[in-house]
Length: 313
Length: 217
Image (cartoon, rainbow over all chains, first blue to last red; front, top):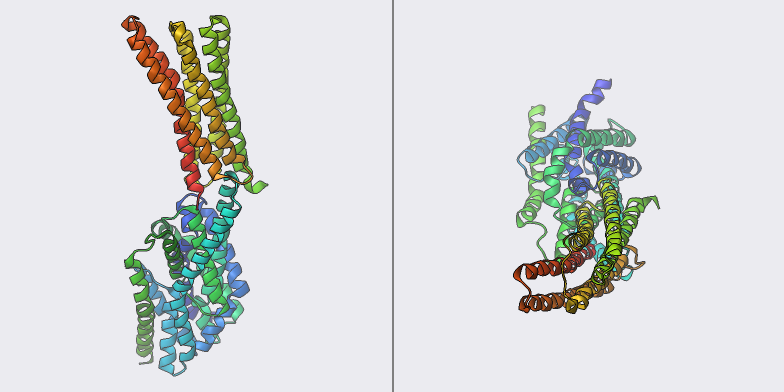
């Protein structure tokens, strides 16, 4: 009986692990690579707030998976396994990838195969993907200007300014972890709720645990390679970028749509680049994001449809 | 507040270090004054004071370093704070060097140049007071007034130029005089060492300017 549940869930657990190992860099990358916070402390904060976000608000996005398409234990496994292959493969080749887009593509393909795909829900999700980096740009622009104006009106003595920024970077990282947990936990186990295999409560528990496992076991290398590339920013800008990313992702949690934290941070950094009149993000990176909107769900969908076809004979 | 504990501690240590450096400069001025007026014994006593204060300043610098290692301030700022403290310590060291030179090598400075020599020390002290005001505003001002800091730093630069003028004039007079070459060179060294203090204080002001720039959004 337990094995009947565990074996399909293995796909989700693997996907959660991949998500955790990849997305930690977006949240505490700047803090760790600038030696503001120790790696161990960052990991502890990450898994704590990620789990909190998953428990308190992760259910909002789980319902979207239930309405996107119907699943069985087998198809849920196929969807998560396919998404995991896409995430793993693209990460291996150094191509930025969104777990949300991969799993949505896979789940939609299953829905198209079994005739249960809700294209209206899919349309809403795709629109939110486009607005993720765009929204992050706008939010970071507004935040930067507002905080800048506040600091100019009430300049802080240097020691307090430094301490406030230090704290701000850590607190925004915690909020980012919370937002990631609330928004992305459904990526790993939402399809199993749609399959009726587990309840939403168990889904967030297992999802949070698998993402945390990825953070603990495999995020370090990604943080030190990706984190530095994304954050050539001064401390104030880094603080605003992470906060804007967290707000963006959390907003989409309220809409019940899983989005990419990676694309949100790219948008936030680009927004700061606009204010400072510098190109904070390379053209290549922006092109990869746009291509990702199309290729990632297509790849996830293709693999899911292929496996589904092969298994059903 | 626990939140700002380390930063506050470093600020306090910095202010104490600043006072020690000022004391060194003030006592060095007094050494020069006593020496030129013939009070050699008093000059020696003051020279020992400078030595003692410089050692106390060293100890404060070590305490500041410890706090920086324990995580005070943002990581990218720590280097600048460390650099600033090192430069402040260099001023105290330079003041001690001047005292050692005067008391050890006993330069024979003709009376006509006494006032100009003392002007160098007086303006150097005034210059450091401007820097002290700038750093105090930076660390303790309730609303860090960047314009005020810039004004103080500007005055540091102006005073440095004044001291350069005095140095240039004195050097010219020394080498136009009838003194033998050895004495001329010795006096020139004395003047150069004395004026080096103001160059270092100007470097301090530049370092503070960079630190202020880094805090600006």
